[in-house]
Length: 515
Image (tube, rainbow, N blue to C red):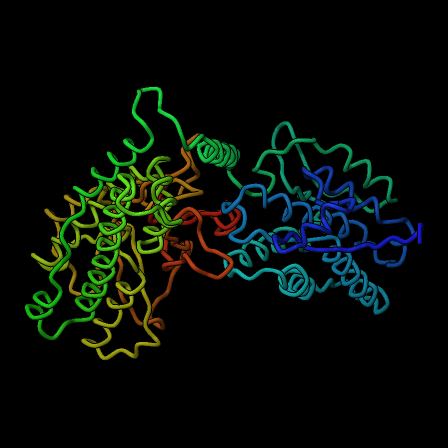
């Protein structure tokens, strides 16, 4: 029939049939870019009648607060992993249902002539059920609930200290008093079109991080698009260049560790020695595969064997200066380029060799371990064995020392009987005040700060009483934690004289492996 039309809706997916796509008109709905445009869209679908449904005086201001919150959680996605570990698809349905919840509870309070607003209930339902129902990551949920703690409360209506979402000498973003819909639209139109990341609780450096990551992505795509044939400007052909890189890397690959001999020397292993043996197994498997693949690439380049898809991928990665995917699967997660990865690879070997020859290091370079979580678990297990603690009721406490270099620890202190000193941690989202040994706001244009040596101490959980500390997640890479929960190592206790909500919204975390 000439008037027949078929509407199909779908989430972004690479499984959608190409034939249907090519014969269709495509309409894409995305949230507007920017706080002002986002709030304008939310209010464009709210009528005066909808605002009249609830007679409570606080309803209209709370709808405005909810609209601001809805815009903030969407805009935070712009900043990648600094914003959310997982990019959640918060949408208009979340806003609508949350607005209905506020209307219901305020309507009951009005009918019962109750002056008390059930803030705890509203925060829980919006933060844990409506918006929080989409959130799969525990640290993302902490950010979400922190926003609601900051935005919902009796302080919204404090006449002596007017509430502001954000305030500087140039910009003030507050909540308009109860009034008609047009008064709120006027307030929205008065918002700046472009906002600083500080409006969302992030540091101003978040913009630099965003543009840096965008530039890296563009550059990576340009590198992938370069031609695969022809000579370079230096006159060296692509094949000769790849062969040279392969020979150079092959010369730097050490011999595998002799595990049967090491096991015989150890005898009955302690928990940390079990970790060492597991690490060496991973290491041997990795370097054996690397040496074999490099040999095959060189043979394929001179025509002795054919190029398989795996060898072609390795050759292309070597030419582009990237870590081959096959090697990446056998090694700890990383975002480094091939050159810096090789330096890191060699340093890992040095640590393993020292551990085998001289015993457990006084300062463990945690970034160099294949699975650092198992080493930390072994520390707790060793302490529990000696002290008779129940393993399931023991945990780790961390303390940042004043040692900025491993050699200072080697010279000045003894190796602790329980726990260890670790290095190789980098602070993202905040700076570190070495004189006061606590968190501070980032310096301008400094995105990552190396943390002094960290002491890790096993302790019984019921004896751990913390004050003036922030629980910072420790991730393997700046990619932080994936949607599957992969990437988190442990939580570190960092001293602070600020409220934890400041560091939560700034996305503060420790990174083992900086790209």
